Amino acid sequence: MSTNHFRNVFFQTADGLTLYLRDYPGPTGDAPVVLCLHGLSRNSRDFEDIAPILQATHRVLVPDQRGRGRSDPDPQTARYLPQTYVADMLQLLDDRSVSRCAILGTSMGGLMAMGLNAIDPGRFSHIIINDIGPVIAAEGLDRIKAVVGSEMAFDDWEAATDFIQAANVDAFPGYSRSDWRRFAARAFSERGGRVNLDYDPNITAPLKEGGGGASPDELWPLFDTLKNKPVLLLRGEISDLLSLDCVTEMQRRHPGMTVLTIPGVGHAPMLDEPGVPGELIGFLSS
Image 1 (cartoon, rainbow, N blue to C red):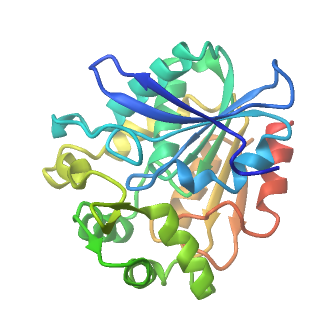
Image 2: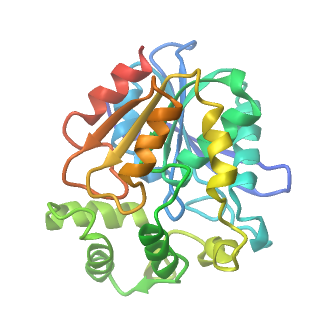
């Protein structure tokens, strides 16, 4: 099925921004729904390979969070917070009349999944968390603070690809140059004759000011709301953001949680790794 088989949808947030959504229709009008949530500096294109696969059984909703991709930037940068994104997603689901769905959340999107479930647990059927947990490893957080939030613009796609490769090669040591070009195509867009990272550089303003990150004391109670729900945790084998100690504690608190380690990659798995799509489909169909 073509990756272009989706509707371009725009919706309004409660505070007046216009956000973008890819709405992939399911095989039937009443097909179950899965909401895909990207990471801090990413956008809906991260799911362009997995969404058409999930579309065989599900309707797939893939938004750009505010300040990313085709969604409006927020003029009030203090609102670039997970709780704001959670409110936006609840607005999205209400607008699309979705009363029940699964969530697939990568990195920040996984934290959002915990927050969404804590607020409205009856709405969510299955939760897939991609390479994040209530304890965010300092090494990975420091890397994110150092790299994300800069305004990067390049003269051409090869220069943009060079940058994205240098920034992420430790996490994807097996990538070929063509893989890095695909990565760049998801992370950048052309504006004003240059190739730019596809996010508002201000998205990390609250994080850098010390107010945009939730502590484990705040996140563990959110994770605990998942204890009676099907949860699949994905972890990149060489992740610098999700430690094995955190995974162990997550398993202790949620013994029924399924853990899938994805070999040879770090933060965060792209979900196109061998065997991963099948695991996701199997879990969502359980």
